[in-house]
Amino acid sequence: LHLAAKYGFKNVLKHLIDKGNEDVNARNAQGQTPLHLACNKEIFDLLISAGSDENVRDSSNNTGLHFAAKHGNIEMVDHLIKQNPCDIDCQNECGQTALHLAIQNAMKYFNVIQENVEIAKLLINNGANISLEDYDGKSPLLYGLVNSMYINIDDVNYLLVEMIEKLDSQKCVDLLFKYLSSSPSKYILVAAFLRKVGDVNTCDEKGRTILHNATMYYDNVVKLLISKGADVNARDNFNNIPLHYANSVENVSYLADLSSNINHKNNKGETPLHVALQNTTIYQIAEVLIAKNASIHLADNEGNTPLHLAILHKKKENALLLIKLLDPPELNRRNNKGETALQMATEKEQELIVKLLLESGANANIVFKKLLKSA
Image (cartoon, rainbow, N blue to C red; front, side):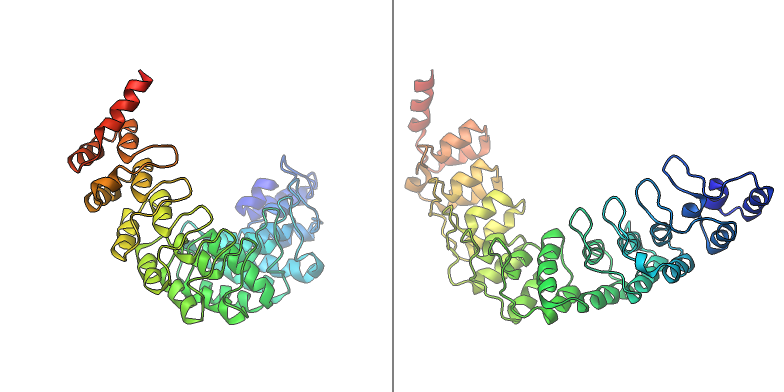
């Protein structure tokens, strides 16, 4: 019965039912009945007429509605909603509803499964909760937002915009922060959020504004936020401004021109240049900051200058640029541990950096003295 239901062998299924020797509510190892596996409405109707229980759950607490939504059976979804409207937000063992599964499976592997998009619309129009979170803290809408990252299809975008417009202002704020921290964001979706958000400079629990979060990704979203009044100099709880978080050449260049202090320090004494030399793999970001007059001389709270950090984090291109720009006294500056750039480069076996430092006037005696002490 299970196999016949799963693969749509109608005549086989009918024959087995007519024989009367099979239990239409029998469970497999996963606790699933043939009804859970029904691949189309015709099979579903045949099982129902034979006495299958529409309300039974499998061992993962999935209902028939979960299965129908997941596999794109819109007629079955429609039938089950009408039979048991109160069960539309039933959660399985992961806390997921039928809407979670419909949306997850509507956007998979860079494709859109239109049947699942239509099922999502049907569930929403019948009152499915778009904000109900699963046990990972993700709502159906958040899944849709994240999964749509690489999909730019009008049907999907319009569905997500309609879902956003159903939220109140506070839920919009909460979800927007989750969205921006989960994936690159789409202009059309952020614009929809902003229509519902009262204050564009509202903060999350870390004191980060929407702009702080958005700078990690697309420049068009950053420009949208600034056009709506986002504060480019806003500070979070760690005293970071949005420029500290910027993770693309475009965003860094744009924010550097607008920020009142490109050398603003956070609680660790780090300027945006210090942060760029530690965190990003895009070496051009540091180059842009330097070209925009970011100081190459300031040290953080540990006494590390940009050159120290470039060597420490193996940013060869940035280290080479800084060596060319710095005078010999700066090349020999020590951090709070007493380390010079040459010592760091020697310990990390960065031969090209060592060579250029020596050629540029770095004091080799400091390294030799340390080697003698350790000998």
